[in-house]
Image (cartoon, rainbow, N blue to C red; front, side, top):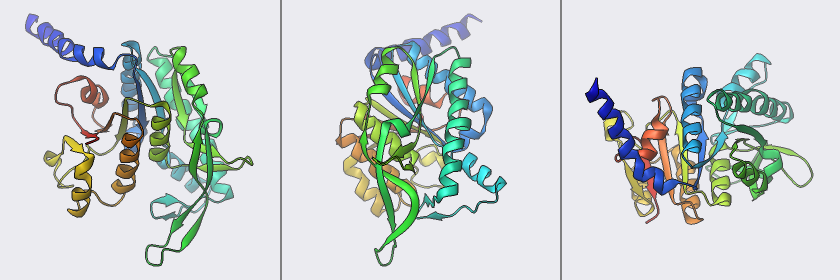
Length: 292
């Protein structure tokens, strides 16, 4: 019994220098992937985020919702189509995206934070993010492809985010945006998280998804790369280690690191408490990306 208690105390002692180091710093947490489909993992992640806030960090949550959106579109018999990894978003689809992100996914996370004893506030990217229409490109010809109401962020208003943080409230942000004429646009949640992290000068940007991090061999989780420096990224792309859907995420991460973010982390949300283990232990459990 005493040995178990001592081990628990050892964990707290190991976390102490990290708690001291990251106190009063902003951490943007992008929550997505299959972890968001599991109520137990949502509850555990919400508790971890509340703990971060309780010990002095300032978490800002940006969430995805792709699977819930796809499920709702299927219910409504609205066809789902992707081009170069981006959801083609027509008028009916943007209405569904808006509804699901705000009234399902965002509400679920805010309720989870409240249930864990924290204070969460629902913030809409429509009030924070300004965007212009984004065109995809034909991979062979390079010609632009119209993918509907999908946007590219051109400006970020951080005032509501800092208002929430100053009142010790955790902002939970739905990744939509509006242009200067009031048109709503769907925004890739990874990119939204990167842009928000840049705007608030976050110390940390953490991606919680359903992959362990960057793997040298995608079939073998033992090949996890614990630390990557930006100077290594091009070689990893040439080697094929970074490819497919990971490429736009990595490029957005590198852009964030160039514009004030200190550290980027990728962790597997399917593993309970991966967020805390990555930030507050000596070895971490995911991939850390650093400038240099």
